Amino acid sequence: MSVSHHWRIASGLLVNLLASICIVFINKWIYVHHSFPNMSLTLVHFVVTWLGLYLCQKMGVFCPKSLPTTKVLLLALSFCGFVVFTNLSLQNNTIGTYQLAKVMTTPVIIIIQTLWYGKTFSLKIKLTLVPITLGVFLNSYYDVKFNALGMTFAALGVFVTSLYQVWVGAKQHELQVNSMQLLYYQAPLSSAMLLTVVPFFEPVIGEGGVFGPWSLTAVTMVLLSGIIAFSVNLSIYWIIGNTSPVTYNMFGHFKFCITLLGGYILFQDSLSLNQGFGILCTLLGILAYTHFKLNEQEVNKSKLVQRP
Image (cartoon, rainbow, N blue to C red; front, side, top):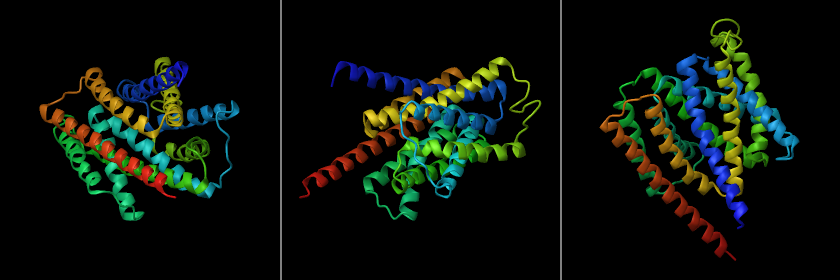
């Protein structure tokens, strides 16, 4: 590989690192300091993401593909659900609890694929779920800012996110599209769905509404949040396309640690010894899961190569 290629890879990883961390901190800042309505913020993210993808396809980054609406309707609905619930989790929990709760997506995906899709997993993979789950439980139990509402949103976010990720994989295979083609089609659908729901849960005009008398700082932060959310999606696609899912997966562990550390520094979230043990336990479980999963993938590749 040329030096310029290595620099492009490094730049892509850096953009994803900064965007992934910033989106968590900026959203938390918006909730804490401006009390911007959650669903309205999600709607802004969807609209900016669609506009960004529209510009990308005009520049030839990807080629859009026409899809039947009925085929992606449920996917678009789950897209709304997982973003809204994860943002509500961030709004009502500390960043540490929010971040660790997201890790539970892996065990839930395994359960869904086992029960409903008949997929099998090795005993080693299943055993890694024990330290992951135990670590999340310990962190949540000893979190001094623990609240039932926040954990309810976290649990709903994990469940809907898991469904969405399983369905995305199935739909990409069924419709023969890549992630950007699918997101380009479902983003406006999700925006339309959320637009019809927002007035029933949040004010639209006036104090506290999306079109309320917000300060210039609040408006700037919200728009910046939308742009960064789009950058996260785009950089994920670019990294996987130019490296591999393995590189992105391993890079994700680094982001996980930095986001946790940043949450405790920027928002002065307290961290007990038991919580620290819980975080370490979860991180070890994630690393073990990744190690065993990668080994299985290598074995499967070798078997395919050896076939006549």
